[in-house]
Image 1 (cartoon, rainbow, N blue to C red):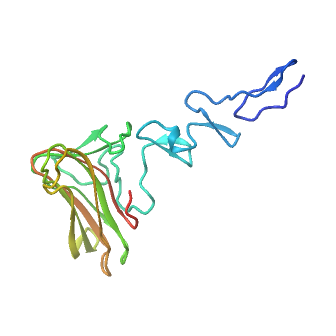
Image 2: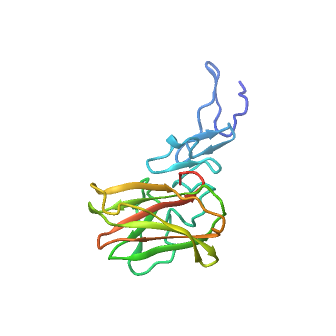
Image 3: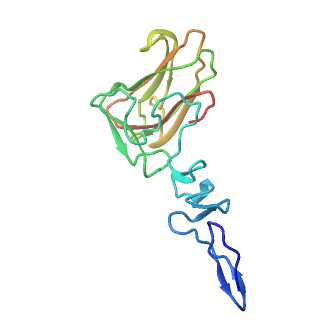
Length: 217
């Protein structure tokens, strides 16, 4: 008996009495079959363990990525504090990720800190932006906050518009992660924007910061 050659995801087993069978050859770290052409790690998000999502281009399980519309650089602090300006009160904290992604982290801020972490970046005028982030409060009545300010010129100079503030601001009754967001449209001379945060003496963790035309990371 001769069996038809299998595709890349299967092996062929020939038996004179039962015929040909084609058991799945996708095992181990790549247990899913993609279009009968290759074995991959995931096809849908539920194929990944807790805290991870499926990258539908590479079909690998990764930490959640920011959407294309998010203009903040390194908004998820996946591997460090790159693109942010900070002082001694801010450190990168591995493992503290709002999604529980084991390969990511967040910005840890502590010690009556103001204006850090800080980032200045270019934006487009007349955009229906939303400003949002997630903060992990380690105490109740946490008076931490983050704010957005639009500017006219490079380097975030020449204030344009008003300051937009979000965060616990002393109003949280529980500890842990909480999401904060607000509508923050840019105006006719808003060419740049800056995001910065402040906290009292208690530690906070900041993750998944966004300025996006949709209210999402």
